[in-house]
Amino acid sequence: MSDDVLRQLAETASNDLGRLLQGAALSMNTAVLGRVAERGHPQIRPSHVAVFMGLDDDGTHISVLATRAGISRQAMGAIVREVEALGYVATTQDAADRRATIVRLTDRGIAFCRLAIEVSDEWNAEVERLLGSEDADRLRQQLRSISGLFSQG
Image 1: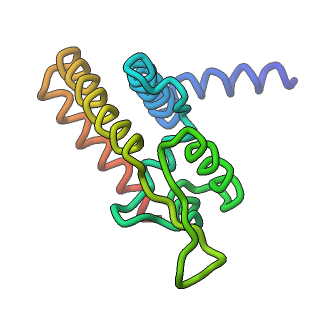
Image 2: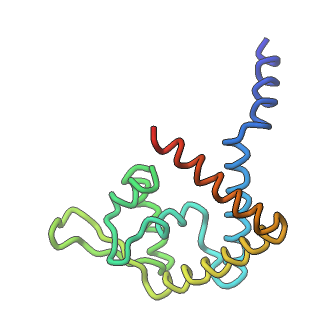
């Protein structure tokens, strides 16, 4: 009995748009981080990206980073400590709230972000060559529409 339902679930999952989108995103992110690693930043892991993607120019509280990433404050704190140990971010206590920690990019973090932008642009150009620029633009718009549909509740 459970064999049948598990087979049906696997068949359904193989065509599920959410899973296909997740798989495509994972493949692209892995490729981009692989290229970034080859160019001098091999220590950065996929989990570290949430720190960079959530930062504001003037620094960001760990609790805000956690909210933006959809993880607990404790989990984000652990990730920030890893990224800080690698020299990509620095943390300081918030003068207005001594219990809060502010995270800011270091020069090494800025260099990583610049390289990540460059590699991401290269990867996106490859995808555009594969799909054609018109189809790539259409795909971007469709993905924005899907994101907007589900973010509205």
